[in-house]
Amino acid sequence: MNTKPQKKGIVPTMIDDAAQAKIETHPLRRGISVLEGSGGNIAVLTGKEGQLLIDSGFTASKARILEALNNLSADPITQLINTHWHVDHTDGNDWVHSAGATITAHENTKKHLSTSTRVEGWQYTFPPSPAGALPTTTFNDEHHVRHNDTNIELKYYGPAHTDSDISVVFEEADVIHVGDTLWNGTYPFIDYSTGGSIDGMIRATERNRSVVTDSTIVIPGHGPIGNKATLTEFRDMLTSIRNNVAALKKQGKSLSETIAAKPTAAYDAKWGQFLITAAFFVTLVYSGV
Ligand SMILES: [Zn+2]
Image (cartoon, rainbow, N blue to C red; front, side, top):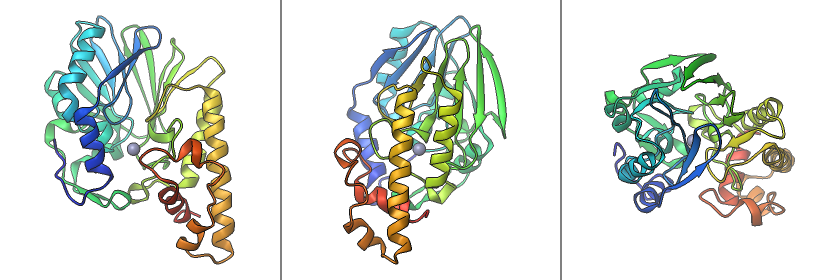
């Protein structure tokens, strides 16, 4: 594991969870499945050219991820795509690369993994990743991969949850992995330290809505598999809380006064039950409006 315990917080909590978590496999369609349980959702495309993974979870879950992959197919892992640079999506890069995979990501993913990077919202400083964990192919705007008879389109969002987020579309299957631009059923983390913002999240969500249809399967970074309705509900939650927080800030309310005014009250029962509490989410939104 390339993360050292620092102040007990979100990152150590995520690693502890991953060390114990069961990996659940959700078959979708056309050889695509999702492994849930180790950090972000991992998508897998099986086939004769080898398994292609989207995101690598936490190294603490390696044995259970391998078991789940072996249950899907006997193919070796030949390609890995990272949706963004965060540790819960890239910690396993090193072992997946050692297993034989190339790694494709946005150029800012490589940039952040290559150096010591502080995430203020997590009160955590990540050391540079080992050389084997770094992307071997990077791009800026768009990149196309043909693998296992499937066209795969990778597209940069611009600054959203971080400054390294990409969407990955499996064209024939009509499946999209939107990384951490969508957290299904929980308030999202937004990483201002590396270019994320509430307005960037809303823009990314609008783009996600505009590229899917009612039959598209939407894989979020965290939470259960969703669809266009999930994106609409998420957009409405983000927009409403953004407007509530902006109005309070405009009235001159401090952060603690804004939290006390409960601008998320209508949403907390559904969205506030995971790592990102209502107060923390208000803090993230407040700094961006
Ligand atoms: Zn993330």
